[in-house]
Length: 326
Image (tube, rainbow, N blue to C red):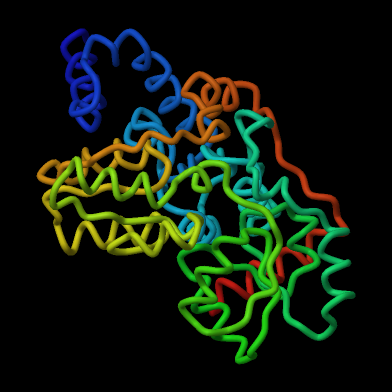
């Protein structure tokens, strides 16, 4: 039995061996990982992990990994009774919208998002009154109440495609002002914006990117479209976290700077060990509220369950489903 347990822990540790020591993994994470894997089996639960989760969550306990769009798509086809969202609250709401009969849990209710908190349903109604007959495209980084006021949702990975699918010259795109301006530059479609920003991506500057290029000669710069437009203009490529992964898998750069939340670099360094990841370490405080201990407790207690007021359910689900159909 001891040998079997040792073999099992060897297997569990292997995916993160490149970013932590076995001693630290055993001391800090191993017991929780084993408990989570057992609880998932017992309760027919799955864990959805965003690309910004830390490696011990992303690589050791998650069942489905990806950006907001990938998690939304995968959530539609889950054969599970319980979904645990290793991400932020709006992602758990989206999973619940698409899986109304399933129990959706968020390990920490304070795992929010500056974008989702940056606009209200009243704000959206005021925008629609000021700009009648202009379609409203809402980033998934928003509450269900805001989504319910929306014609169609989008993610950073499909925003361009969603906007172009409307076939109109002018769009209300909320809440991320920088994403809207970056899509406007790509499409030529006029964007009516709202002044909300991601607290991680808004901190990057063009001067910072140029400094990294001076220090790390030959580095390839990949920026998230939530960054300010002048930062995106400094990059070699811009895309969602899923598009970043696809680009690295295809191009295999020797050295890359991911201008986004820094756990992304930790996770990709394990998948692409031949690429050197320069880490501009801007952390998302909300993503980091999700821990292995929190996930374990959530599965043990079935807390905290995500619920959506009935009046928001159908219109918000319709906006998300329209996005998935594009």
